[in-house]
Length: 366
Image 1 (cartoon, one colour):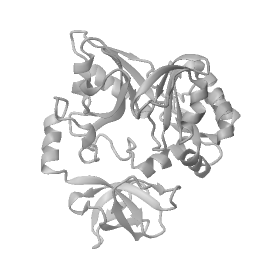
Image 2: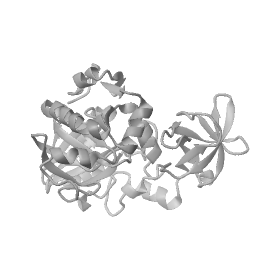
Image 3: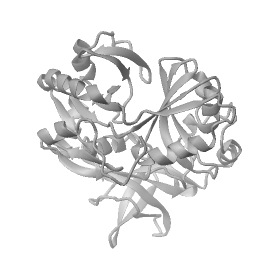
Image 4: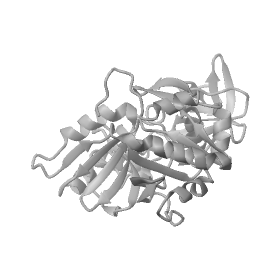
C-alpha cells in the first residue's frame, strides 16, 4: 500500500469508534489517541495490560537469493546474525550521515525477511529501497502494509491474557523472537515478543480481514485481568519513559545513529551505506549526543526548546518531553554538545521566557 493524501483507516477503525475513542489524524491515518485517558491507559500498561492498534505501520517483504546481501547494505545492524524466528531493531542510513528510518527486521526463512517501518515514512522507505535493488533481480520486494494488521498487547499480564487463546506455548518465547501460531481460531498469526512500551508483551501480525477477531477475543479475555484499549497518546509517554527514540523527534534525516546512542545497532563487521562516515564519527566521537534529562523545576519541556549551560549559553535542543506518568517527574530528551553530555550535568531548559533547571541522565527514566 502506498500512502495517498486521503485519510486512511485501519481495519479496526469501527472498533475504536464503538469504544468512543478520541480520534486524531496521524501519519495519514485516523487513529485513536486515547479512550479512557492517557494517564489511565499508561498506568494500565505498566501494571496490567493494554491493547494497541498499530496497523498503520508498514510491512515490506524482502525475499530472494540476494535478500541478505541487500539488507546488509541497506541497514545498519548485522542481518547475517539473524535466524528464522529472530527479529532485530535497526535503521537505514541515508547516505548523508542521517537516517531514512528506524525499523524492525524479521527473518522468516533463509531467503525471506519482513521489514516493519514507520507509517509516516512508508512511501519514502519504499522508494529508497527500490532505488537500491540489485539489477540482477535477485531480490523481490512486496508491500503488504494494506493487507496486514498489527496489534500490540503490552504489559506484565500479556502472557496470561494471550496464552489461553494461543495454540503455541509462548512462555519460552524470548525477547525479540517470534513464532507462528493460531490465536483465537485465526491461523497464520505472527506472534512477536517485541513492543514499544518497555512493559513486556507481544505484537501480533494478522491479515487485515481477521484483525477484528483477534481484537475482540483479546478484549474479552483481557478485561477481567485489567486490560484496557490504548491509544497513541500513552504509547508516546510509555516509550519516552524508556528512552526509546521516536522518528521525526529524536532521530531523523539529520541525525546519525552514533549521535542518537544507537551504536549498538550499528555493526561495523560488514559494509553498509555510510559505514565509513559512521565509523569515523564513532572513532572521533560525535559533536553532539542524545541525552535524557529530568526537570528540577515544574515546567514541561517540549520539542524545539533550547537547552542551555549554567552560563545560560545554548548547548542543544529538546527533541521529546512530557511528564513521566509512572514517576511524576517531568522528563525529556535532546541533543547536547558533547562537552556537556555527561550524566549528572546540570543544564537549563528554556520554557517560554524562563530558564528552568534540569539534570542530565541516561534513560530509561524508570
